Image 1 (cartoon, helix red, strand yellow):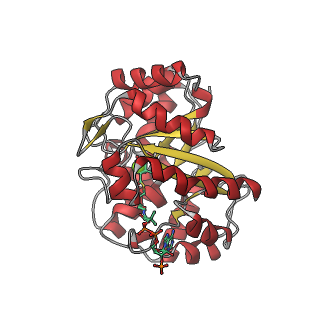
Image 2 (cartoon, helix red, strand yellow):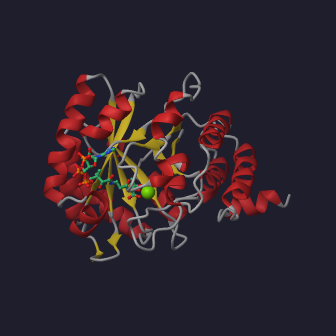
Image 3 (tube, helix red, strand yellow):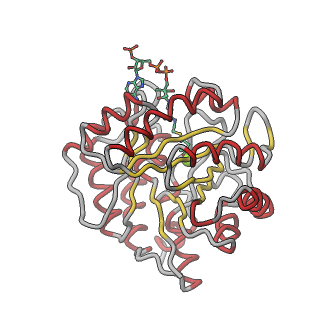
Length: 296
Ligand code: HMG
Ligand code: MG
């Protein structure tokens, strides 16, 4: 069995740090991730620079970024303005990001759940016509800080609409990390009942309550083979109260190595990168594997 790790450290990780790293340091971070064996590295996002100042240098970052053969570097794009900016940098892979709840759609996108689709539709249409690959996230799949628990059917309704736009994959986001494995099963049951199988799905867990790895294992047992993670476990969403870092890539690789599941990723190389990054960010990595291996 093989699992594809969709690395989000340079995007989800850095978007929520109080320190904004210089552009050349971000390039070095991305270079190190590819060197460790990651083949999908979400590099940045073309959102409004005032909304996420930490990634305001997206165009400059990509303009001078060496690309490794066999590695793909997707970026977040919310709207047509973002698509124009990404296209100008030769981007081939983008991700749109929808919300399952009204509260988060408003706070994160300044849209209603319904009007987010109007914003995304021309983005996906133009991107596909230009030969790009488009992934979709759906946020608040398990719980929402303003609305509480989110029903699987509500997530499926939004996810189905995003897939129907022409996205090749849906990444199910536990934006605030409140999900537990039973809830993962219930959500995957609901997608299955709607005709969406694990081949179209990825999982995106934040580790706020320490459940990210258990949730990932539950998803793998259901046949999901694409898992989002962030090196060092950095990350969060500035527009989601209480969101902390993603599942750490090191924690994921450690578990998959133990299970004999191939990832092509060298955990020790990632740990060295997380230690280097922690110095620059001024805080230690929350990953237990980073902490354990750094003492060996
Ligand atoms: P808005 O204010 O409604 O934008 O924001 P607008 O369409 O009304 O445009 C207002 C002005 O902004 C215009 O300029 C646009 O050109 C400009 P003016 O004509 O007034 O001079 N503008 C832009 N400029 C640069 N790049 C752009 C852009 N768009 C508009 N892309 C918008 C709507 C979507 C832009 C805003 O809400 C936004 O940027 N939101 C992004 C928030 C964000 O990045 N959140 C974090 C990522 S999501 C996440 O982390 C969750 C995830 O990890 C999964 C999970 O964990 O669940 C993916
Ligand atoms: Mg996220």
